[in-house]
Image (cartoon, rainbow, N blue to C red; front, side, top):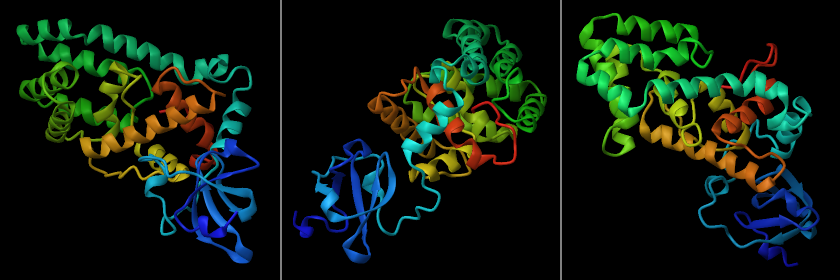
Length: 299
C-alpha cells in the first residue's frame, strides 16, 4: 500500500477491524504513524500497513468538519460508550427494567399527557373559548410533574405566566402555533422563543420540551450542560448558542439523529425514539458529566 494514499485528510478503514467504521487521517505522526479519528473507535495512532483507503463519504455528519485543527480533547470511543451503557443495563439494554423505570417510563407518560391534553382539537376549542389560562395549565403540566426542567426554570415560567392575561394569551397562542400552526417549523419555533423572552423564561429546556414530548421520535430535548458535554465526547460541532434559536436547535437535532443512526448501524442497541437515544447519550457519559453525583435520569 503506497503511503501517498494515506495523506492528511484521507479517509481510511482499519483492515483488521472494519467495525471501527470510517476513519479520517488528521496528522502524520512519528515513525510514519497516522493519527486517525474513527467514527466508532475514536482517536487512534495507526501504522500505515493496517490502513486501507476508503472513498470519501458524501457529506459525513461527523467527519466532514473534522481536521487537525479541531480540538479533540475529551473525545470518547463510541465502542466504549456502548460498553458503559450495556454495563449499566446488562439485562437487555433499552429493554432493561431498570432503564425503563429510571429513564423511559415517566417520559412516555408525560408525552402521552402532552399529546392528549394538547391535541390540535383540544387547543383549538380552548383558543376559541379564550381560555388561555387552561392552555397554559395543560402546556406546563407535563414538566411540572417531571424532572425534565430544572426547578428554577419551572418557577421562572410560572412567574411569567402570572403576569396577567396578556402574557397567558401570548404563551398560549405561540404554544399552539408551535405544535399545530401553519408554516415552517423554523419560524414557529423562533416565534415561541420570542414569546418566552417576553415572559422572562427563555431557556433551552423550556423552549424544547413541547416538541420533544409531542414528537419524541423526531425532536430532541436540550439541557445545555448535557448536550455540550455529549457533543464534545463525540467531536460533533453542534454550533451551540446560549440563546435558543432554530438554527442552533437544528444543528443539535442533527447531532442527536446522527447518534440514532450510529446506534441503528451498529445493531447492538436499537433505540425506539429519541427518548432512548438521549438516554443512551446521557447514561454512557454520566461519569464524565457528573463524576461525583448519583446518576440522574436522562434529559
